[in-house]
Amino acid sequence: MTTIVEPEPAAAAAIFGARIDSARAFADALAREGEERGLIGPLEPPRLWTRHVINCALVAPVLSPGVVGDIGSGAGLPGIVLAIARPDVRFVLIEPMERRVVWLEEQVRALGLDNVEVVRARAEDVKLPRKLDQVTARAVSAFRKLAPIAAPLVRDGGELVLMKGENASAEIDAAAKEIRRLHLSDVHVEVLGEGVVDEVTRIIRATVR
Image 1: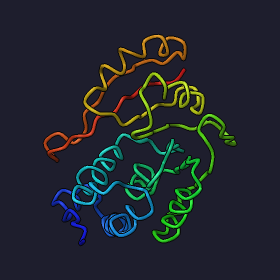
Image 2: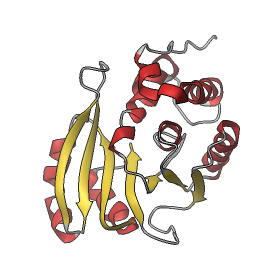
Image 3: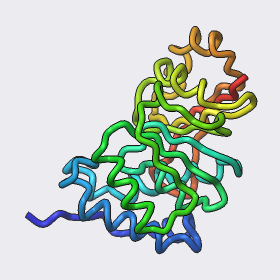
Image 4: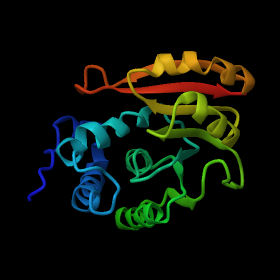
């Protein structure tokens, strides 16, 4: 059966700018190999650009020059996409599963991403030479469970930039105890891509102290 892959949306070129060719190459690789290699489900190719590639790329303007960690990078969503969109930022992709690490390393080489390091480890166990400036994650776990894993990886004054769904505000409410314990401040939801795409991206941002 032929897999139907979503055509590139008009917004993609504007979002990626000069990096659009790399974004196309990554989307093509994911469309060709993602399902077979257990990186994406069978329902994802028809919404690959909208739900995944562009959804991740909308986070790029929020990132600051420095070192950003991506917890549970998986197929490279958002880590590879963000590394394409922000060549001025260094990324550490943290992924425990070997076959996904192999994929990530393949994509780093194929796309010539010299701003990416892939680390095979669980975020709870990873040993990094220094704290990160920001940490992101997508579809990993609820904020109250993710924050205690992510916050210790971030330097004082750094940020959590966690991709979330429509229940992001409720996740913050449910994490009140963890927010206090971890001394997180300015914890809030931001909606990205309004007026640019139909499917917006929501993130929880928080400062680590």
